[in-house]
Image (cartoon, rainbow, N blue to C red; front, side, top):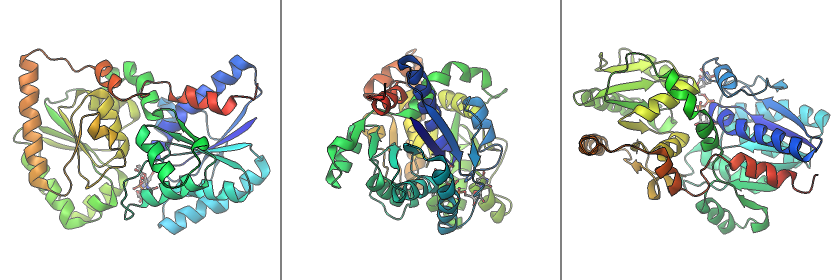
Amino acid sequence: MHILHVVGARPNFIKAAPVLRALAARAGVDRIYLRQTLVHTGQHYDASMSDVFFQQLEMPHPDFNLGVGSGTHAQQTAGVMLALEPVLREQTPDLVLVYGDVNSTVAAALVSSKLGVRVGHVEAGLRSRDRSMPEEINRLLTDQLSDLLFTPSADGDENLVSEGIDPAKIHRVGNVMIDTLVRLLPLADAHLPAELPKPYALVTLHRPSNVDDVPWLRQVLATLADLTRQLHVVFPVHPRTRQRLDDLGAAPGLGARLRLLTPLPYLEFLALQRHAAIVITDSGGIQEETTFLGVPCLTVRENTERPITISHGTNQLVGRDLERLRAATLQILESEVRKSALAFQRSEEISNQRVPLWDGHAGERIADIILRGAA
Ligand code: UD1
């Protein structure tokens, strides 16, 4: 059996690593001849957004790098399609696996399905119901094109069924991003940056709705600067956000207590999440990771495609309401102080039990389904 994996952007690497690993292990045990080919589209290309993830996640070197790079949505999507088509024709895989909801995901699903190659979508079924998000378009289309849909939670199954997808194609396997977290959490603390001020809020913002709107970004920064009266703020900055901050010139209110960092490797960022008093983000994956870690998370978005992080986890949507962001931060800080007075310990195991199948074994379940019958 020949499986070809397509990855392109930072969160894809974190999701693909456990699937590659589990497929290899399962094939070894069952003595199945399995060939795995890894294609990197090159959507993310900086060493800090790509290479360091391959190293820390111990992923094999990509067999192909399509070198697509940045551009408009059409340029990026078309670039992946044009470069991937000849690779698929030459490699003739039995199955193409695509991950998450980035432009590389939908492009690869479209090329594969037109060539008659079966497509498996890892992290299927998530919906924000907000079509102004490019990722929502990518999710809807990728799921329509896929033959195997691997969902992280029950809401994913329900969304797919309501869109007319055959339930026989849907497999609830759990969360592959949490597989990587479970495997690497024991190594994370050794990567905690030295001289970390405490308590601190960990901030990440990269969605166009937050960072491409310059007046809004300026207000968000002013609010973060204001929060430094209560706690330190540590903000590793995504390249898109860095460009916008450069456009702003001297960002307002940046001081010693608001630290802007370069994008961090996986283990450093995981360590920072684990020890944060609070995480403020617009990322999808970080809503999930904080749910697992039991760290309070404030999401600067009006909606989420991951409602389980609210119903079962630690996430709150604050929308575009900076007063709410400020008030929620203060409230969380107060309750953290109370908990520490009671010697409360955050427990990954307790929070882990709350979301079914977020247990470090999703990749194995995917391997089991794909290789079932191949022995
Ligand atoms: C993409 C995904 C988003 C995901 C995010 C994770 C889409 C539509 N969006 O957004 O869902 O949450 O990745 O990071 O696929 N850049 C660099 N170096 C890099 C990569 C990007 O400098 O290695 C700069 C480029 O100027 C580029 C900009 O960042 O134009 C945005 O990159 P892009 O891949 O278009 O989208 P992301 O914002 O990273």
